[in-house]
Image 1 (cartoon, rainbow, N blue to C red):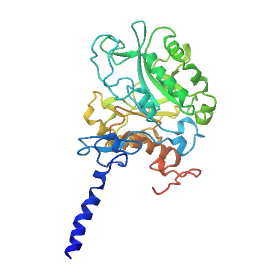
Image 2: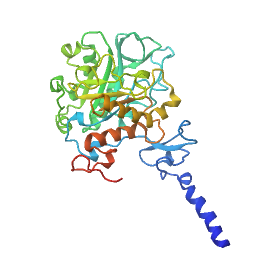
Image 3: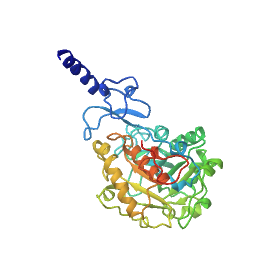
Image 4: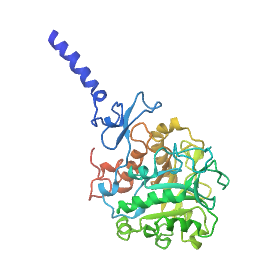
Length: 364
């Protein structure tokens, strides 16, 4: 009996501490960790004081729905992780010589965001200092202390990503304060992005389906750009966002439990003459420590609320701050849920059974 008790005392603590003892890339989701090197592929070591104590491995990248299932459906039949103010990055040095006094919303570069599976980028573009700049400002005016960088640098990062990844599609959603005639189109041309341009003439009206992703890839029309300025659709061939998309209220107005109102510029979310749905989920004034909680269960709850408000349509774009911060799966899990619902009616895209009809879900 004494020997059995000894074995129990030894074996059970080892079993209970297995997650804590993992290391060198062996740690799995929500296992304890001390550095990123401990965590397996697609994970990183993170501390979310609101969600758990200590540091644990949480997700750092999306599931590629095109490789997992297929890319033969219309563009609007998939969901895409989107970064709010993708350019407003922690620690970015001032390029104006004046210390920056404005809010940041992300923590890694555009290149890293794209590498981790982000496919929608929200960018605020301003006419500033004789050029087009990315700026986090107000009232349509960029200042030395709110400017981040000339837009061409970020656009060249996007060009490099699209060139290196010929099967990927990126969507840009622009808050547009560039008043110079053709100034916006010129900066895209200067960045070498026009070869990827998806033309407005190919965008569906009246709620029709978008072209197949596979056709967009084959034709190399892999950059979709929306502007907030209606006149530029006619003058520069840049799509006016709310001709093609509905969007919920951004900031705190879009965070009320059980409610999903539309943004003022957007038509009602259940307007099915627009075939794309964007859901924002972030605070009006960023509270960085709570983003790991925001991007987890409450985000999924809001996506379900907005599904009802949008006439039982799941979001195509989900926009968040600090997209990697979570209590485990975070915004990546939310997008996996959306793609599961869109592609097969399952709760997770990993549960979709390739080649079968809706509701054919595997048990894992």
